[in-house]
Length: 225
Image 1 (tube, rainbow, N blue to C red):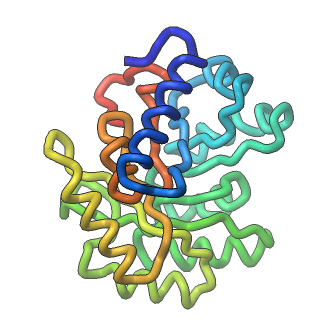
Image 2 (image 1 turned 90 degrees about the vertical axis):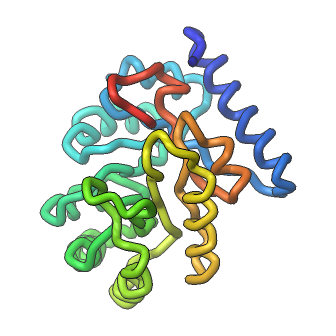
């Protein structure tokens, strides 16, 4: 559970990431994305005040409502879209976000490429893999990853890596290990994996970005982030 003190919660998560990286013998660490979906600007501000600058949102519309004003006060914010993205919202997403973690189909690749060309802005892109083959989740099938990667690279998207959300209520490590293998096999460096319940395991298995919400802000009903 997070502390009532944002500084303590943030320090605890950062320390856990550092320990996990050291345990794995890593010389680098993982970027902490503070998942601020459903949180107001007033709830986010304490983390900004103590130096957290990388945040994640699930919905374009929600992010548009609160982040422009926060960015005016903290211009060095990096904003990541971690939720599903409709192709018709691609231009809005490119305009607002610095990274998009849910690129999962050719139609979205095409929409993002068109938006990037129009706006002259190129957010980092993570290809989302449906690592547990779950019909209710976004992400391309493992078997479809080579084709999607070729499509994204051919369209000129800046592919930073892969992203996945393992199935709930099972051991996440095998899924993280599979995503890491897929990244190695396909020559991409980034691994966006791990949330509040399992981010330390993800770091030991090579995560470059972890998406942590409830360990910083407190639990949300039905949430795993």
